[in-house]
Image 1 (cartoon, protein in one colour):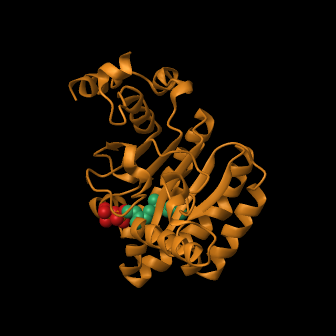
Image 2 (cartoon, helix red, strand yellow):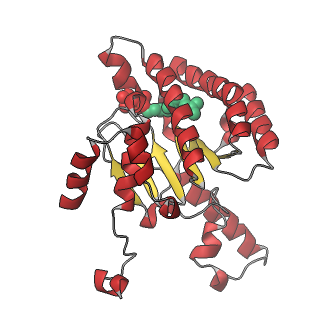
Length: 263
Ligand code: FPP
């Protein structure tokens, strides 16, 4: 803890270019995920409607995706809409759905330019037809890209994902396709929406909240968690680099002792 705080104090004196130069490209998180929280509060503080916060939040998504792709992060999952978010006022829900369509229309060129492969997790079938059509288009047109995987969590919930996996496993056992004894962590992971994606190494949550909110529950088992007070619309490239540097400054033990890791 002491170590982390000292580092953050030091980072304050550095420019974005200096911070970027400090990032060790060989020890990037293999998979980063972000809970983009605080759009509503950002707007309220300015006397604006909540949707203004989501709109500004979308601009931040652009910058974060571009920076992660250029750094060489292999996979980035963004929590864009949870299974619980359907309970929001209908106008906000429909605005978020139109924003998703707008995002895909605008950002497909960035994905192509930066060699990003677009992907989703969650119940995409719940989304309006226009959003689904753009999702399909973005997936198809970036399918051959070999750089970062940009994964949007849409109508996603961690418990839902685990239950869906359990149902598929039960069906495979019932039909004789799989023996119960064959089930282990690796095979279970293969039934999740994130199958084929690298291990989740770093989860960032903005806005000062310290919860995981039903996000990537299985995948989070060994991930490092990073919380920042910044509201999502205020989250900068600088904040992103500091989060990655903080992650790179941590010792990950995966249940072992520091002595074992040192030897
Ligand atoms: C949480 O802030 C944010 C969301 C539920 C939506 C996230 C959406 C974006 C960042 C913009 C669109 C992005 C894409 C990729 C289309 P909140 O509304 O819960 O904020 P609050 O806690 O301050 O109310």
